Amino acid sequence: MTMVQLYSKNLQQSINIQRIIGKIKGRHPGPTLVFLGGVHGNEPAGVIALYQLIDELRSQEIEVYGSIYAVAGNLSALRNGKRFEEEDLNRMWSFDQVKSFLNSENRPINSDRQEQIDLYKCFETILQSEPGPYYFFDLHTTSSETLPFITVNDNLLNRTYTSQYPVPIILGIEEYLEGPILSYVNELGYVAFGFEGGQHEDRASVVNHLAFAYLSLVFTRSISKDAINYHHYLEVLSKTSPMGASFYEIFDHFGIHPDREFKMQPGFVNFQKLKKGQQLATYAGETIYASNNGNIFMPLYQNQGTDGFFIIRPIPKIFLRISAMLRKVGFDKYLTLLPGVKWKSERKDALMVNQKLARFFTKDFFHLLGYRSKKLDKNHFIMKNREVASRRSDYENTAWYKK
Image: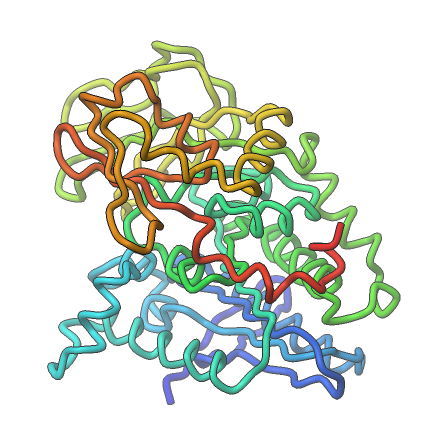
């Protein structure tokens, strides 16, 4: 069994980590929570926080309902302090990629692929051995200075659940990233999202991750609010974010090729306001400027990675309410009456959109109804419905869903 040693400045000790950092089986029925840390090996804060969480729950004999799993992501990369060895483990989880390695009889071509197989088996074991409802939390940090925030695939389950946290919530990142692990879990229908606790080297990131984990235990009724200093953990996250639980959407992304030199202008921090035409970076010898007004999001200040930066904007509450209403009444069933729009399959979970014929209907219109796009060719988009897979019935008896 692979074991990795990490040194924690917060705990002032070295800790030994394996795939299952720790698990706790409660004496009473309840949800199954899966916390994942260290999918990127240069982001150990989440792993350290999960180690501390399991230790505190056990030592303080806090009563648990259901099951709690703390899982480590890329053990090989964690050992070496690298984002990944050869391939980004958080870009390998499209259904086609997973199907490919499940059907392959060959050995994995590198350690990152082996990590994926081991992680898949770990998740499958949990799903087969534990009852629902299931919650998956992916803990990360960023290369730039940042306040904590949440990233979610845009469906109503995720929106409703994550609005309990006092931090900004970013919708739509799945439209710009190929194969993140939580998009795969979302396609299985479960509540699943990412939490970014701070900058890689900031000691506060561990504190933020721990606060997030405790709040998650309370929000899912895995533990009682009275079993911990709930208001302390709520305050830890609340004080980091003057915006509270506000929603943002990504509307621009600058992707980069790993063989071309990219250098972000120094000093940018997450959520910093931008003006159109502002200089942001240099890439392959060319200067890159902001294409629109907005807020910078996840500017790249590390050597590994293919996402130079994103630009986001706040979503007015009225649009969120309209969006929820239209999705609940199934308004999207009328979309194929529009010119240039047809169902991609009999399941009716995706649309084929001919941009030439449907040019009057912007991506924002489809976003409102729960669709996110993938470009197929010059004139066509595949619009994937994020609501079809949601297992709403699994969560309908939870306190947060009833609200």
